Length: 301
Image 1: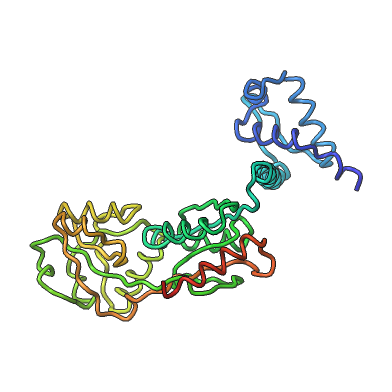
Image 2: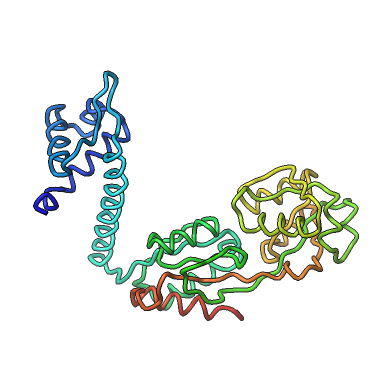
């Protein structure tokens, strides 16, 4: 039990540097310490742990199994301490709460800029750290406490998450002018599968939805090009490299003016729900609770 009290923060930070560089010498250079000081801190860590953390090799060091375990914990400890320092700094400068929110591309492109602005207008002392991620990653981050609040698509499992409806949106087909489908007002998804698609990268909930719909129709989605953003999809379609499916609110007037055509999808799955979720509403800070309640009330906005 006594060893528990000997894991000092600086040694953990140094251990992370040694592990990432794979060298005591390089770690000494990076941290402006002597090689002897680095070796002593690592030896002290090993005494506290009661086991060997590094294997000294002719060309550097290699983590043992225990070293890999300590590295994972050390990174979490340092990240939490850095977060604590940031939040304390925020309080010192007048910020009264810091909320970490992750959201998928659809939410950020369509709704969040306006919603966040409206919330912060009424809550100027709150700080929101917003990150754009894939829905699956968002749910994992909320579940493990890396994010306080997440906004994600309805077709991604969200076990262990308390959720509410954030917004509803509609998916539409985007094609270049002159395409065989450009003269149609609406179309069934199955009737588009003869053509090549421009899609989002693997892991996106939108791509998963299209692949599932094609599978249900016992056909194949012909993905010619994959990109990381809706803007990328539009640019590729504009060059005649395929057709694509986007949220309707993401198809701005300037996109249509660039020579693209929006076609309605008749399929039920084209009407989507975006959820807002958290690990535990009761465990949220007062600021995060206000943000969650505000966002969950935006369904009909």
